[in-house]
Image (cartoon, rainbow, N blue to C red; front, side, top):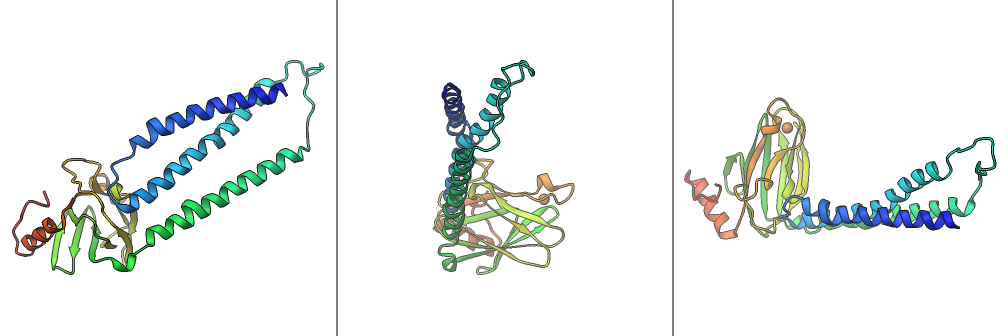
Length: 252
Ligand SMILES: [Cu+2]
């Protein structure tokens, strides 16, 4: 019984320390979130990060405790532990608890989260075609006849349909601030939906940018584009200016 109490105390202590790290160091270190999708993703990430702490702590403490407490001080003497080959209570508890946790994760952040990401996809008002090439992104706004290189300008609060493809090798269209990413594959088009919900700009926050996330050659690390999420009327002004070859400055 004393072993159980010591084990429980160590487990609780390591869990508390781990949760402190998750809450104070890990979650606050996430890059800026600027889309409705980012909230769904971050919610799932935080949930899994928090739950992984007691589970990992249990395994680590169990290993360390068993190694120290039941080490072979005197292999021939009375101190040797009795091997327990069949502890049904523990086996079944472990099986039921971990299975229940897994089902919860599959249904909760898994199926539920994906459903939330797909919500309202047919209402996307703005289409942006993303062409990835070695080593830059070109953004085409087919509804407005506008094409720009290495800068993505979006209106805040509008659902956007991104049609992503590549002209040469496999790239990946990734916007960390949106927590959304999809491969850019030559010969095919992949679609993701994003609803930016916060005005951001790469100039103000360097983590708010478009970044290639698939090793695509020597220029991969530099394959990024500016991101600018602006007000709807500012976006319209920018479109008009781009269509006539000018520039309002919204993209800079
Ligand atoms: Cu790349």
